Image 1 (cartoon, rainbow, N blue to C red):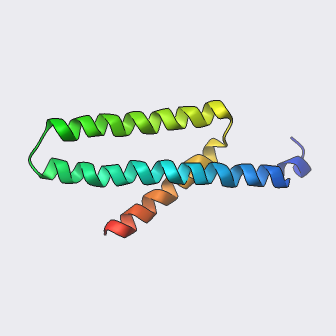
Image 2 (image 1 turned 120 degrees about the horizontal axis):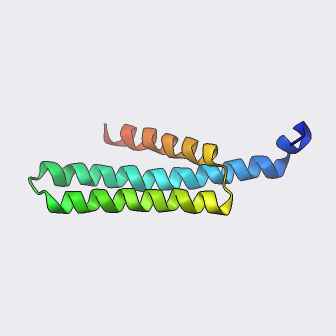
Length: 92
């Protein structure tokens, strides 16, 4: 890849779109984590474990789909981590 292609608008748009998708995945994942913590502290066991499995399954499936569709995985992960910070700030 030459430097002009690396800095092209379509590449930047792809990175931004991948980051936005990662942020959406992260918002769903970490918001469900907040719900999961409430279920665990509420005294139940099976409902929070089931939610934990579903939460991980949905996140893994979404990341797999991003990889298969050719999204920029570093941008997806950056978006996911930024969403984590946003959810932590909202709940703290």
